[in-house]
View (cartoon, rainbow, N blue to C red):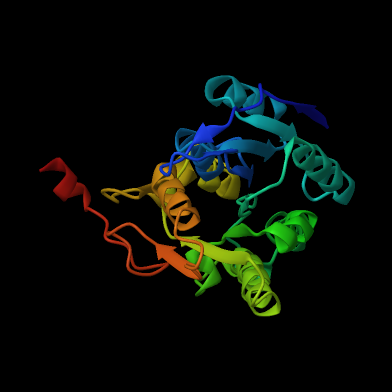
Amino acid sequence: MRTDSASEPSPINNGDMETRTVRRAVVTGASTGIGEATVRRLIDEGWAVTAVARRVMRLKKLAEETGCTYFAADLTDDEQVAAMAAYVLSLGPVDAVVNNAGGALGVEPVAEANVEHWTQMFDRNVVTTLQVTDAFLPGMRERGGDLVFLTSTAAHDTYPGGGGYVAAKHAERIIANTLRQELVGEPVRLIEIAPGMVKTPEFSLNRLGTTEAAEKVYEGVAEPLVAEDVADAIVWTLTRPRHVNIDSLVIRPVAQATNTLVARAKPEDEAE
């Protein structure tokens, strides 16, 4: 585990010409894909951001390019989560936590389930989200804040070969849904973003194991979502007026109707 940070951001001036401190966010799974894109977008919008992931060199590069702070940690380890939270809170109060860390492993049917894969997916998607959320929740209950949960359309339906990932994402979604009831009347917004098909460098590669298999996921799809599309949705939810809560936002490419029904060009169409 290693921590490092860029220089501290200075106060900014808002539209009412009243000097205030920039809003602070924590983004997990920030070394690639949606997490990285979210860090970049929030920085562009004037936020101070701490990027969290396991790969310190990727985080260091992101910090050099954006000015974010960062903390390298394995968020399935409760001691590392505690150390991360202590570091982040030493920089100042946190206004938003984007729970993006997670991922899928394998496409085995339930009858052939790889229990190790299921356990890892539960740890990465559910336990990590729970621990990070609980680490920042006390401060948010006192002064207000936003908790964003990056689930998936897999959290709303299922599909053959998706049992383990679907189960994990359903469980992650239930954290947000339950907290929304438990914290009603308190100044904490609970936001779920559920993306469909998103083409990122690593999601399908990590799930399927080879570049060839990963590319087939998007084969013939004219315009799958990209990480920046989801980052745009995240930032939009965070910048709504404080009395507005985006409970759940499903975002898919136009080519996708359900988890399994996707418009794909035929080879002869592509040739034309």
